[in-house]
Image (cartoon, rainbow, N blue to C red; front, side, top):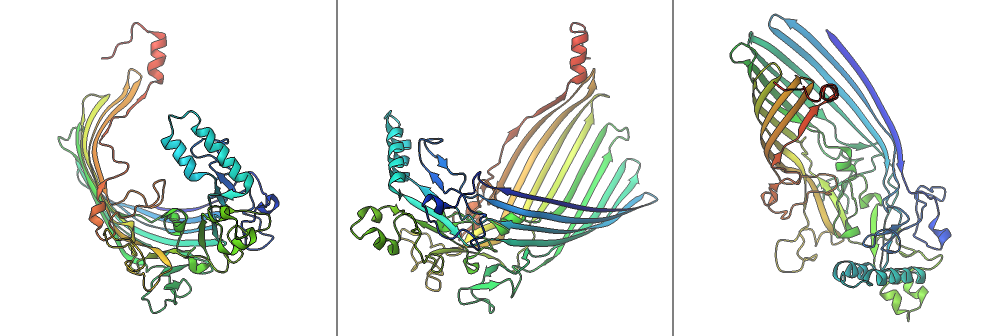
Length: 517
Protein backbone atom coordinates (compact mmCIF):
# COMPACT_ATOMS: atom_id res chain seq x y z
CA UNK A 1 0.00 0.00 0.00
CA UNK A 2 1.31 3.44 -0.97
CA UNK A 3 0.18 6.53 0.90
CA UNK A 4 1.02 10.00 -0.46
CA UNK A 5 0.51 13.24 1.42
CA UNK A 6 1.04 16.85 0.43
CA UNK A 7 0.52 19.76 2.77
CA UNK A 8 0.79 23.52 2.58
CA UNK A 9 0.31 26.02 5.37
CA UNK A 10 0.59 29.77 5.37
CA UNK A 11 -0.13 32.58 7.77
CA UNK A 12 0.47 36.29 7.84
CA UNK A 13 0.49 38.55 10.88
CA UNK A 14 1.50 41.96 12.13
CA UNK A 15 1.68 42.61 15.86
CA UNK A 16 1.79 46.36 16.34
CA UNK A 17 0.57 49.23 18.47
CA UNK A 18 -2.77 50.96 18.00
CA UNK A 19 -1.44 54.13 16.40
CA UNK A 20 0.46 55.11 13.28
CA UNK A 21 1.86 58.48 14.32
CA UNK A 22 5.14 59.92 13.08
CA UNK A 23 7.08 60.90 16.24
CA UNK A 24 8.20 64.07 14.44
CA UNK A 25 4.58 65.19 14.47
CA UNK A 26 4.80 65.13 18.27
CA UNK A 27 8.03 67.14 18.26
CA UNK A 28 10.25 64.14 18.97
CA UNK A 29 12.88 63.31 16.34
CA UNK A 30 14.09 59.75 16.87
CA UNK A 31 15.95 59.41 13.58
CA UNK A 32 15.02 57.48 10.41
CA UNK A 33 12.35 54.84 10.94
CA UNK A 34 12.36 52.98 7.63
CA UNK A 35 13.96 52.39 4.27
CA UNK A 36 12.46 55.61 2.85
CA UNK A 37 10.02 58.42 3.63
CA UNK A 38 7.23 56.20 2.30
CA UNK A 39 8.10 53.38 4.72
CA UNK A 40 5.80 54.08 7.67
CA UNK A 41 5.85 50.59 9.20
CA UNK A 42 7.56 51.84 12.39
CA UNK A 43 5.51 55.01 12.80
CA UNK A 44 4.14 55.08 16.34
CA UNK A 45 4.31 56.99 19.58
CA UNK A 46 7.62 56.26 21.35
CA UNK A 47 7.40 53.87 24.27
CA UNK A 48 7.51 55.99 27.44
CA UNK A 49 8.54 54.03 30.52
CA UNK A 50 8.21 54.75 34.24
CA UNK A 51 5.48 57.39 34.07
CA UNK A 52 3.91 56.20 37.29
CA UNK A 53 0.46 57.74 36.73
CA UNK A 54 -0.11 55.32 33.87
CA UNK A 55 -0.22 51.59 34.54
CA UNK A 56 1.76 49.85 37.27
CA UNK A 57 3.97 52.10 39.39
CA UNK A 58 7.05 49.93 39.05
CA UNK A 59 7.05 49.35 35.29
CA UNK A 60 4.49 51.51 33.55
CA UNK A 61 4.59 52.24 29.83
CA UNK A 62 2.78 54.58 27.46
CA UNK A 63 2.77 54.06 23.72
CA UNK A 64 2.84 50.26 23.58
CA UNK A 65 5.60 47.66 23.78
CA UNK A 66 8.86 49.03 22.43
CA UNK A 67 9.68 45.93 20.38
CA UNK A 68 6.57 46.27 18.21
CA UNK A 69 5.77 46.04 15.39
CA UNK A 70 6.65 42.41 14.71
CA UNK A 71 5.84 41.44 11.14
CA UNK A 72 5.65 37.99 9.56
CA UNK A 73 4.17 38.30 6.08
CA UNK A 74 3.97 35.51 5.15
CA UNK A 75 5.19 32.36 6.88
CA UNK A 76 4.72 29.32 4.65
CA UNK A 77 5.84 25.70 4.41
CA UNK A 78 5.40 22.80 1.99
CA UNK A 79 5.34 19.22 3.21
CA UNK A 80 5.51 16.18 0.89
CA UNK A 81 5.40 12.64 2.33
CA UNK A 82 5.45 9.18 0.78
CA UNK A 83 4.82 6.02 2.86
CA UNK A 84 4.85 2.46 1.51
CA UNK A 85 3.63 -0.49 3.60
CA UNK A 86 4.06 -4.17 2.74
CA UNK A 87 3.00 -7.23 4.76
CA UNK A 88 4.95 -10.42 4.17
CA UNK A 89 4.44 -13.30 6.56
CA UNK A 90 5.11 -12.11 10.09
CA UNK A 91 6.70 -8.89 8.87
CA UNK A 92 5.09 -5.48 8.37
CA UNK A 93 7.60 -3.36 6.49
CA UNK A 94 7.31 0.40 6.08
CA UNK A 95 9.47 2.57 3.84
CA UNK A 96 9.00 6.29 3.37
CA UNK A 97 10.27 9.81 3.40
CA UNK A 98 9.41 13.43 4.01
CA UNK A 99 10.55 16.63 2.29
CA UNK A 100 9.90 20.06 3.81
CA UNK A 101 10.49 23.52 2.39
CA UNK A 102 9.96 26.29 4.93
CA UNK A 103 9.99 30.03 4.25
CA UNK A 104 9.30 33.19 6.19
CA UNK A 105 9.40 36.87 5.36
CA UNK A 106 9.97 38.78 8.57
CA UNK A 107 10.74 42.22 9.91
CA UNK A 108 11.94 42.89 13.45
CA UNK A 109 13.41 46.41 13.35
CA UNK A 110 12.92 47.42 17.00
CA UNK A 111 13.23 50.95 15.63
CA UNK A 112 10.70 52.59 17.93
CA UNK A 113 12.46 54.53 20.65
CA UNK A 114 12.07 53.66 24.31
CA UNK A 115 12.32 56.71 26.57
CA UNK A 116 12.71 56.24 30.32
CA UNK A 117 11.90 58.90 32.90
CA UNK A 118 13.08 58.99 36.50
CA UNK A 119 14.33 55.44 36.03
CA UNK A 120 16.84 55.27 38.86
CA UNK A 121 14.76 57.32 41.28
CA UNK A 122 11.67 55.26 40.56
CA UNK A 123 13.70 52.12 41.23
CA UNK A 124 14.73 53.51 44.61
CA UNK A 125 11.18 54.52 45.51
CA UNK A 126 9.76 51.17 44.48
CA UNK A 127 12.26 48.92 46.28
CA UNK A 128 13.64 50.94 49.16
CA UNK A 129 10.99 53.47 50.21
CA UNK A 130 8.08 51.11 50.75
CA UNK A 131 7.44 52.48 54.22
CA UNK A 132 6.92 55.99 52.89
CA UNK A 133 3.24 56.43 51.84
CA UNK A 134 4.28 59.19 49.41
CA UNK A 135 7.15 57.40 47.70
CA UNK A 136 5.19 56.50 44.56
CA UNK A 137 3.76 60.01 44.33
CA UNK A 138 7.21 61.59 44.29
CA UNK A 139 8.32 59.27 41.49
CA UNK A 140 5.26 60.06 39.41
CA UNK A 141 5.62 63.82 39.77
CA UNK A 142 9.33 63.69 38.96
CA UNK A 143 8.76 61.53 35.89
CA UNK A 144 6.06 63.84 34.52
CA UNK A 145 8.24 66.88 35.17
CA UNK A 146 11.06 65.29 33.15
CA UNK A 147 8.69 64.53 30.27
CA UNK A 148 7.28 68.08 30.20
CA UNK A 149 10.78 69.56 30.28
CA UNK A 150 11.96 67.30 27.44
CA UNK A 151 14.47 65.43 29.61
CA UNK A 152 14.89 61.65 29.58
CA UNK A 153 17.03 59.37 31.70
CA UNK A 154 17.54 56.94 28.84
CA UNK A 155 16.79 56.63 25.12
CA UNK A 156 17.29 53.41 23.17
CA UNK A 157 16.42 51.85 19.80
CA UNK A 158 17.90 49.83 16.95
CA UNK A 159 18.82 51.25 13.56
CA UNK A 160 18.48 49.49 10.22
CA UNK A 161 15.73 47.80 8.24
CA UNK A 162 15.44 44.06 8.84
CA UNK A 163 13.30 42.84 5.93
CA UNK A 164 14.48 39.27 5.52
CA UNK A 165 13.36 36.29 3.41
CA UNK A 166 14.49 33.24 5.38
CA UNK A 167 14.31 29.68 4.03
CA UNK A 168 15.35 26.15 4.92
CA UNK A 169 14.90 22.74 3.30
CA UNK A 170 14.99 19.34 4.99
CA UNK A 171 14.72 15.69 3.94
CA UNK A 172 14.08 12.55 5.97
CA UNK A 173 14.01 8.88 4.82
CA UNK A 174 13.19 5.80 6.88
CA UNK A 175 12.70 2.05 6.84
CA UNK A 176 11.01 0.06 9.61
CA UNK A 177 10.07 -3.58 10.19
CA UNK A 178 7.51 -4.87 12.69
CA UNK A 179 8.24 -8.57 13.16
CA UNK A 180 5.89 -10.84 15.11
CA UNK A 181 8.45 -13.37 16.24
CA UNK A 182 5.94 -15.30 18.37
CA UNK A 183 2.24 -14.90 19.07
CA UNK A 184 3.14 -13.13 22.31
CA UNK A 185 6.28 -11.24 21.23
CA UNK A 186 6.66 -8.47 18.65
CA UNK A 187 9.95 -6.83 17.72
CA UNK A 188 10.22 -3.51 15.86
CA UNK A 189 13.42 -2.13 14.34
CA UNK A 190 14.20 0.62 11.91
CA UNK A 191 16.45 3.51 10.99
CA UNK A 192 15.80 7.06 9.83
CA UNK A 193 18.15 9.41 8.02
CA UNK A 194 17.68 13.18 8.22
CA UNK A 195 19.53 16.01 6.54
CA UNK A 196 18.86 19.70 6.92
CA UNK A 197 20.17 22.57 4.86
CA UNK A 198 21.67 25.64 6.47
CA UNK A 199 19.25 28.45 7.24
CA UNK A 200 19.61 30.94 4.40
CA UNK A 201 18.37 34.31 3.16
CA UNK A 202 17.07 34.93 -0.35
CA UNK A 203 19.27 37.98 -1.00
CA UNK A 204 22.24 36.74 1.08
CA UNK A 205 21.61 39.41 3.73
CA UNK A 206 23.54 37.86 6.55
CA UNK A 207 27.02 37.07 7.79
CA UNK A 208 29.01 34.87 10.15
CA UNK A 209 31.81 36.22 12.31
CA UNK A 210 34.81 34.09 11.27
CA UNK A 211 37.84 36.38 11.63
CA UNK A 212 40.39 33.72 10.66
CA UNK A 213 38.55 32.56 7.54
CA UNK A 214 40.29 33.50 4.25
CA UNK A 215 36.95 34.86 2.99
CA UNK A 216 36.46 37.20 5.95
CA UNK A 217 36.47 40.96 5.45
CA UNK A 218 38.45 43.43 7.52
CA UNK A 219 35.80 43.37 10.25
CA UNK A 220 35.91 39.57 10.55
CA UNK A 221 32.63 38.77 8.73
CA UNK A 222 32.02 36.19 6.01
CA UNK A 223 28.98 37.18 3.97
CA UNK A 224 26.32 34.65 2.95
CA UNK A 225 27.17 35.50 -0.64
CA UNK A 226 30.55 33.86 -0.05
CA UNK A 227 29.58 30.92 2.14
CA UNK A 228 26.50 29.45 3.88
CA UNK A 229 26.22 29.96 7.61
CA UNK A 230 27.33 26.39 8.31
CA UNK A 231 27.89 23.10 6.55
CA UNK A 232 25.20 20.51 5.94
CA UNK A 233 25.13 17.73 8.55
CA UNK A 234 24.75 14.53 6.49
CA UNK A 235 25.45 11.75 9.00
CA UNK A 236 22.17 11.91 10.93
CA UNK A 237 21.27 8.23 11.11
CA UNK A 238 18.78 7.48 13.85
CA UNK A 239 18.25 3.82 14.79
CA UNK A 240 15.15 2.75 16.69
CA UNK A 241 14.17 -0.54 18.27
CA UNK A 242 11.26 -1.65 20.42
CA UNK A 243 9.45 -4.73 21.65
CA UNK A 244 6.16 -5.84 23.26
CA UNK A 245 6.02 -9.09 25.26
CA UNK A 246 2.87 -10.71 26.60
CA UNK A 247 4.74 -12.54 29.34
CA UNK A 248 2.13 -15.14 30.36
CA UNK A 249 0.33 -15.30 27.00
CA UNK A 250 -2.95 -14.25 28.59
CA UNK A 251 -2.98 -10.56 27.64
CA UNK A 252 -2.83 -9.44 31.27
CA UNK A 253 0.86 -8.81 31.91
CA UNK A 254 2.79 -6.94 29.22
CA UNK A 255 6.39 -5.76 29.12
CA UNK A 256 7.28 -3.02 26.62
CA UNK A 257 10.57 -1.30 25.88
CA UNK A 258 12.19 0.85 23.25
CA UNK A 259 15.01 3.13 22.20
CA UNK A 260 15.24 5.75 19.47
CA UNK A 261 17.71 8.38 18.33
CA UNK A 262 15.95 11.46 16.95
CA UNK A 263 17.30 14.66 15.43
CA UNK A 264 15.72 17.96 16.36
CA UNK A 265 15.76 20.86 13.92
CA UNK A 266 16.49 24.25 15.61
CA UNK A 267 13.65 26.70 15.07
CA UNK A 268 14.07 29.75 12.87
CA UNK A 269 14.05 32.13 15.82
CA UNK A 270 17.04 30.49 17.51
CA UNK A 271 19.27 31.58 14.60
CA UNK A 272 17.35 34.41 12.95
CA UNK A 273 16.41 36.39 16.08
CA UNK A 274 18.13 34.98 19.18
CA UNK A 275 17.45 36.93 22.35
CA UNK A 276 21.08 37.83 22.96
CA UNK A 277 20.61 40.37 25.72
CA UNK A 278 23.69 41.74 27.47
CA UNK A 279 24.10 45.06 29.24
CA UNK A 280 20.67 46.37 28.30
CA UNK A 281 20.59 47.65 24.74
CA UNK A 282 24.26 47.12 23.98
CA UNK A 283 23.31 43.51 23.34
CA UNK A 284 20.13 43.76 21.33
CA UNK A 285 18.79 40.74 19.47
CA UNK A 286 21.74 40.40 17.16
CA UNK A 287 21.16 37.54 14.77
CA UNK A 288 23.03 36.08 11.84
CA UNK A 289 20.88 38.04 9.41
CA UNK A 290 21.00 41.31 11.37
CA UNK A 291 24.67 41.79 12.21
CA UNK A 292 26.32 45.20 12.30
CA UNK A 293 27.82 44.14 8.97
CA UNK A 294 24.31 44.54 7.50
CA UNK A 295 23.90 48.00 9.04
CA UNK A 296 21.87 46.76 12.01
CA UNK A 297 22.96 48.11 15.37
CA UNK A 298 21.49 49.28 18.69
CA UNK A 299 22.01 52.63 20.35
CA UNK A 300 21.44 53.34 24.05
CA UNK A 301 22.22 56.78 25.48
CA UNK A 302 21.82 58.23 28.96
CA UNK A 303 23.11 61.75 28.24
CA UNK A 304 22.84 64.16 25.33
CA UNK A 305 25.17 63.27 22.42
CA UNK A 306 28.17 65.59 22.06
CA UNK A 307 27.05 66.88 18.66
CA UNK A 308 23.74 68.01 20.20
CA UNK A 309 25.19 69.78 23.22
CA UNK A 310 26.03 72.86 21.17
CA UNK A 311 22.39 73.12 20.08
CA UNK A 312 21.22 73.36 23.69
CA UNK A 313 24.02 75.65 24.86
CA UNK A 314 27.26 74.66 26.53
CA UNK A 315 26.07 76.16 29.82
CA UNK A 316 23.06 73.84 29.97
CA UNK A 317 24.21 71.42 32.64
CA UNK A 318 20.96 69.44 32.52
CA UNK A 319 21.88 68.11 29.07
CA UNK A 320 25.08 66.70 30.52
CA UNK A 321 23.01 64.53 32.89
CA UNK A 322 19.90 63.87 30.78
CA UNK A 323 18.97 63.22 27.17
CA UNK A 324 17.67 66.60 26.03
CA UNK A 325 14.88 66.65 23.43
CA UNK A 326 13.69 69.48 21.20
CA UNK A 327 11.57 69.74 18.05
CA UNK A 328 13.55 68.83 14.93
CA UNK A 329 16.64 67.64 16.82
CA UNK A 330 17.55 63.98 16.40
CA UNK A 331 17.93 62.88 20.01
CA UNK A 332 20.67 60.39 19.01
CA UNK A 333 22.63 62.92 16.94
CA UNK A 334 22.45 63.66 13.23
CA UNK A 335 25.35 61.36 12.30
CA UNK A 336 24.33 58.26 14.28
CA UNK A 337 23.04 56.45 11.19
CA UNK A 338 26.28 56.82 9.24
CA UNK A 339 28.63 56.64 12.19
CA UNK A 340 27.20 54.15 14.70
CA UNK A 341 28.74 54.31 18.16
CA UNK A 342 30.53 51.20 19.45
CA UNK A 343 30.73 48.81 21.18
CA UNK A 344 28.81 46.21 19.16
CA UNK A 345 27.85 42.64 19.82
CA UNK A 346 28.37 40.09 17.07
CA UNK A 347 27.39 36.44 16.71
CA UNK A 348 29.15 33.38 15.34
CA UNK A 349 27.95 29.86 14.53
CA UNK A 350 30.55 27.12 14.34
CA UNK A 351 31.25 25.85 10.82
CA UNK A 352 30.62 22.17 11.68
CA UNK A 353 27.29 22.92 13.35
CA UNK A 354 25.50 19.64 14.16
CA UNK A 355 21.81 18.79 14.32
CA UNK A 356 20.82 18.41 18.01
CA UNK A 357 20.18 14.82 19.12
CA UNK A 358 17.64 13.28 21.47
CA UNK A 359 18.17 9.73 22.75
CA UNK A 360 14.88 8.35 24.12
CA UNK A 361 14.46 5.07 26.00
CA UNK A 362 11.77 3.46 28.12
CA UNK A 363 10.77 0.22 29.81
CA UNK A 364 7.19 -0.41 30.98
CA UNK A 365 5.38 -3.24 32.70
CA UNK A 366 1.58 -3.12 32.69
CA UNK A 367 -0.68 -5.41 34.70
CA UNK A 368 -4.41 -5.85 34.23
CA UNK A 369 -6.16 -5.88 37.64
CA UNK A 370 -9.65 -6.46 36.29
CA UNK A 371 -11.59 -5.87 33.09
CA UNK A 372 -11.90 -2.18 34.07
CA UNK A 373 -8.64 -1.51 35.89
CA UNK A 374 -4.92 -1.69 35.12
CA UNK A 375 -1.68 -0.63 36.76
CA UNK A 376 1.66 0.20 35.12
CA UNK A 377 5.18 1.12 36.18
CA UNK A 378 7.63 2.66 33.72
CA UNK A 379 11.12 4.03 33.50
CA UNK A 380 11.40 6.81 30.93
CA UNK A 381 14.60 8.66 30.10
CA UNK A 382 16.12 10.96 27.53
CA UNK A 383 19.59 12.22 26.80
CA UNK A 384 20.07 15.39 24.77
CA UNK A 385 23.36 15.76 22.97
CA UNK A 386 24.81 18.40 20.60
CA UNK A 387 22.26 20.86 22.01
CA UNK A 388 22.33 24.56 21.22
CA UNK A 389 24.21 26.76 23.64
CA UNK A 390 25.94 30.10 23.52
CA UNK A 391 29.43 31.04 24.66
CA UNK A 392 30.92 34.51 24.88
CA UNK A 393 34.23 34.19 23.04
CA UNK A 394 35.25 37.67 24.16
CA UNK A 395 34.70 37.16 27.88
CA UNK A 396 37.59 38.14 30.14
CA UNK A 397 39.19 35.36 32.19
CA UNK A 398 37.83 35.22 35.73
CA UNK A 399 39.70 37.77 37.82
CA UNK A 400 39.26 40.65 40.21
CA UNK A 401 40.61 42.96 37.51
CA UNK A 402 38.24 45.04 35.41
CA UNK A 403 37.22 43.62 32.04
CA UNK A 404 38.45 45.96 29.33
CA UNK A 405 39.83 45.57 25.81
CA UNK A 406 43.30 44.78 27.17
CA UNK A 407 41.97 41.58 28.77
CA UNK A 408 39.38 40.51 26.20
CA UNK A 409 40.60 37.73 23.85
CA UNK A 410 39.67 39.80 20.77
CA UNK A 411 40.22 43.19 22.40
CA UNK A 412 43.33 44.12 20.43
CA UNK A 413 42.04 42.91 17.03
CA UNK A 414 38.49 44.18 17.35
CA UNK A 415 38.31 46.85 20.07
CA UNK A 416 34.83 47.92 18.93
CA UNK A 417 33.30 44.51 19.72
CA UNK A 418 31.97 43.80 23.18
CA UNK A 419 30.35 40.36 23.32
CA UNK A 420 31.20 37.83 20.60
CA UNK A 421 28.51 35.21 21.07
CA UNK A 422 29.17 31.79 19.59
CA UNK A 423 26.35 29.36 18.82
CA UNK A 424 27.69 25.85 19.29
CA UNK A 425 26.70 22.26 20.11
CA UNK A 426 28.28 22.05 23.55
CA UNK A 427 24.96 21.73 25.38
CA UNK A 428 23.70 18.46 26.85
CA UNK A 429 20.87 17.25 29.06
CA UNK A 430 19.72 14.18 30.99
CA UNK A 431 16.21 13.24 32.10
CA UNK A 432 15.29 10.18 34.17
CA UNK A 433 11.88 9.33 35.58
CA UNK A 434 9.79 6.72 37.33
CA UNK A 435 6.19 6.85 36.08
CA UNK A 436 3.30 5.04 37.73
CA UNK A 437 -0.24 4.97 36.32
CA UNK A 438 -3.52 3.55 37.61
CA UNK A 439 -6.33 3.45 35.03
CA UNK A 440 -10.06 2.89 35.38
CA UNK A 441 -12.15 2.28 32.25
CA UNK A 442 -15.95 2.51 32.29
CA UNK A 443 -16.37 1.43 35.90
CA UNK A 444 -20.10 2.11 36.43
CA UNK A 445 -19.72 5.10 34.14
CA UNK A 446 -16.46 6.30 35.72
CA UNK A 447 -13.32 6.56 33.59
CA UNK A 448 -10.18 7.99 35.14
CA UNK A 449 -6.45 7.85 35.44
CA UNK A 450 -4.07 8.64 38.29
CA UNK A 451 -0.41 9.30 37.47
CA UNK A 452 2.62 9.69 39.67
CA UNK A 453 5.94 10.81 38.20
CA UNK A 454 9.21 11.03 40.07
CA UNK A 455 11.81 12.64 37.81
CA UNK A 456 15.03 14.57 37.60
CA UNK A 457 16.08 16.81 34.71
CA UNK A 458 19.58 18.27 34.40
CA UNK A 459 21.09 20.33 31.59
CA UNK A 460 23.62 22.99 30.68
CA UNK A 461 20.88 25.39 29.60
CA UNK A 462 17.10 25.14 29.35
CA UNK A 463 16.38 27.79 26.71
CA UNK A 464 17.67 28.56 23.24
CA UNK A 465 15.05 31.22 22.64
CA UNK A 466 12.26 31.85 25.07
CA UNK A 467 11.07 33.67 28.15
CA UNK A 468 14.39 32.99 29.87
CA UNK A 469 16.24 34.48 26.91
CA UNK A 470 19.37 32.51 26.11
CA UNK A 471 21.27 29.96 28.13
CA UNK A 472 24.61 31.68 28.51
CA UNK A 473 27.48 29.98 30.28
CA UNK A 474 28.28 31.36 33.71
CA UNK A 475 31.85 30.36 32.95
CA UNK A 476 32.43 30.31 29.17
CA UNK A 477 35.71 28.51 29.77
CA UNK A 478 34.05 25.50 31.43
CA UNK A 479 30.73 24.18 30.07
CA UNK A 480 30.30 21.68 32.91
CA UNK A 481 29.96 24.52 35.42
CA UNK A 482 26.55 25.25 33.89
CA UNK A 483 25.24 21.71 34.43
CA UNK A 484 22.42 21.96 36.96
CA UNK A 485 18.69 21.21 37.42
CA UNK A 486 16.64 22.35 34.44
CA UNK A 487 14.46 25.44 34.74
CA UNK A 488 11.39 23.23 34.36
CA UNK A 489 12.61 20.44 36.65
CA UNK A 490 9.75 19.10 38.80
CA UNK A 491 10.45 16.14 41.06
CA UNK A 492 6.90 14.96 41.78
CA UNK A 493 3.93 15.22 39.45
CA UNK A 494 0.55 13.80 40.45
CA UNK A 495 -2.21 14.69 37.98
CA UNK A 496 -5.60 13.01 38.14
CA UNK A 497 -7.88 12.72 35.15
CA UNK A 498 -11.42 11.43 35.16
CA UNK A 499 -14.26 11.20 32.70
CA UNK A 500 -17.39 11.59 34.83
CA UNK A 501 -20.27 12.30 32.45
CA UNK A 502 -21.96 8.87 32.87
CA UNK A 503 -20.97 8.74 36.53
CA UNK A 504 -22.69 12.06 37.31
CA UNK A 505 -25.73 11.04 35.30
CA UNK A 506 -26.09 7.97 37.52
CA UNK A 507 -25.68 10.10 40.63
CA UNK A 508 -28.61 12.25 39.56
CA UNK A 509 -30.76 9.17 38.89
CA UNK A 510 -29.81 7.00 41.89
CA UNK A 511 -27.95 9.13 44.45
CA UNK A 512 -28.43 6.59 47.27
CA UNK A 513 -28.02 3.35 45.36
CA UNK A 514 -24.80 3.88 43.40
CA UNK A 515 -22.08 1.51 44.56
CA UNK A 516 -18.60 0.77 43.28
CA UNK A 517 -17.56 -2.90 43.20
